[in-house]
Length: 254
Ligand SMILES: [Zn+2]
Image: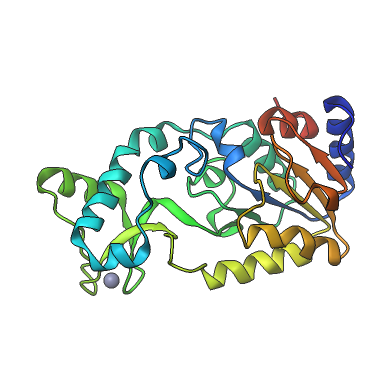
């Protein structure tokens, strides 16, 4: 059901949140664009101006690795300045109230963690851009020392545990979905009684599969997104509105 107007939609959402025992939010770019993080896939976004570097190119070409890191460091001011928005804070307040066992996100910006949701409770389908990992042994590396070495003389990072290549902890094109995270996401969707899609247009799989999975399992489905999605017909409630003000008002958070 598409909300008649924002006021009645927010009220209906507030009631559904109050009635639900286990809410699993599924968040996409829309929750972060309000905080200054660009939507890379949008028209004019980074990925339409710069062809994404596929995983196999990163592994096989030093030039591609140089370019990948150069782009990452060019984005640093944007990521460093971004703070959790009202939408993130609204979800964090529901987490603190014990309503949210986990958040599934397509975002790589660490803003759910920054809003106070523990890292273990954030299921990141596309990884995380705020740190790096060795492709060989998965050892974690922080971005700052890598940036200092790279900006000094374009030194590419190498793992001191196994000599492997280091890459931001994001999932690149052609890298395949992270199996462990996918399994956790499915378990979370099947255990919830309300799936709350927030700021995802639900066009990219596996995102697009979760709403049907939740509905078939008897959960309610709410979609809050600025634009209509192809799955709106399936939802119990649809709000085509800005994320922060909508979620904030629904949970009574300014
Ligand atoms: Zn390693």
